[in-house]
Image (tube, rainbow over all chains, first blue to last red; front, side, top):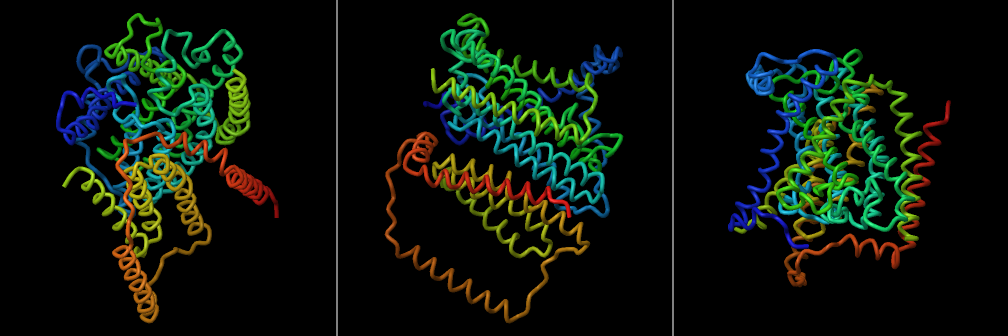
Amino acid sequence: METTNFVYNLIPNETIAIIVISVIPLIFLIVYALLAILGELKISAWIQERLGPMRTGPWGILQPIAEVVKLIQKEDLTPDSANKPLFNLAPYIIFMGAYASFAVIPFSRYFVPSGINIGLFYIFAVGSIAVIGIVMGGWASNNKYSLLGAMRSVAQIISYEIPGAMAILSVAVLASSLDLEKINIAQEGGIWNWFIFGGQGSWSKIWVFPFTLVLSLIYLVASLAETNRTPFDIPEGESELVAGYHTEYSGMKFAMFFFAEYANMFVVAAVLTITFFGGWNSPFGNFMQGPGWDVFWFISKAFFFVILQIWLRWTLPRLRVDQLMYVGWKVLLPFSFICFLFISLFKMIN
Amino acid sequence: MDIFSIVFYLFAVIIVVSAAIVVMSKNIMYSAFSLLFTFFGVAGIYVLLNADFIAVTQIMIYIGGILILIIFGVMLTSRITGVDIKSGTTGKVQIAFAGVISLVIAITLIFLFANTKWFTSELKPHQSTIEDIGKELLTNYLLAFEVASVLLLIAIIGAAFIARRKS
């Protein structure tokens, strides 16, 4: 497949083009993180019948900027008995793991930072770098709460990676590709061709619809667990562990953890969008379809799932550790296997 | 220098420096975490060689699996046994032996590298490798593939059995 990147056409120098391409998602990420922080504050307030922040700017919409300024100004504390090199390195590793996924996320058919043909596999692989960062931070803090939080987080992420991966693998089977661009192209032509409805094909795909629906729900649940969001935020359960693996962090390093969490939220929302909800495709077939609209549809779909995550966070109570493991291993995993087997069978017969 | 060489030397430096830390660090946790960068650098070299599938697999298996296992092993053993695991300095005789052996291996490798007639393949446009790998695995190398999966299954069952047994 040809590289479909408009930056290469704009900037003739390849080196500069590569740098620009790798910076564009970062700029997007910063804007998105500010919006998501505001969304988190406001949505939580509305759910709890409060107004939320109202003082900074009209209706408090400048609140996230104020928060960032506050975090930058804060003193950067390192505990005396912490392991300093690892303690300082951990936030960057976690953020790197979160940001690495953006290398393959196709925002539009004319802007795919790197169109490698194993995009889905890559996203799952780089997700594991963040796990190392979490262990590093938890261990180097030299604090029992941090270590326990890190252990729980790692156990949780590894457990839920399996049903999540099975769900994604089923889509790879349906699209016969791991290339995110090809998966998007395979869902062209209106809402009925999205993989949640079985992808393109004749009416026989009605058989596959219940399974893809279940798989999209499985991936949603697994992605909540992977980003440590409620109802799976056991690693940072305040009543038990203060704040989990980032208890000891302050100032900019805490902001890095925060930033990485929001980046991860967007990544899982983007993966859900690409795999089950048509990616950059318009729900109305050829209407409102095109390179510019791609960005609009992709980002609005992904934002919808980010908002859904925030909504769930302020609605559901937290699970217990044993319930978490039960849901992961005894509910999601068997169901994802059954769905995967059926979808493979369907694909083979069809 | 073109961008390819710059990236290559960057990854090479990452690999060598982090591998040196793995071997020489007294703190075993540093060694374990430093392994992260070694694996990462090797994955980067794979990418430069157009072996993208192997690179991602490297990250998935070594960083996502084996390294986490190593770190947990180190972390839990030193906490449970109460002994701080630290690698001390060895005696002078051992260092001398190790030095001689390393030197011999290094000289042999450099000698081989300088004297081998390397076949350089033509520069091809980057193609998809996973399709070929998948087809080969399920046709020509089916036996090896199945044996590996059965082996992993046995390992899983064994691990579950050990974890289950009450003393």
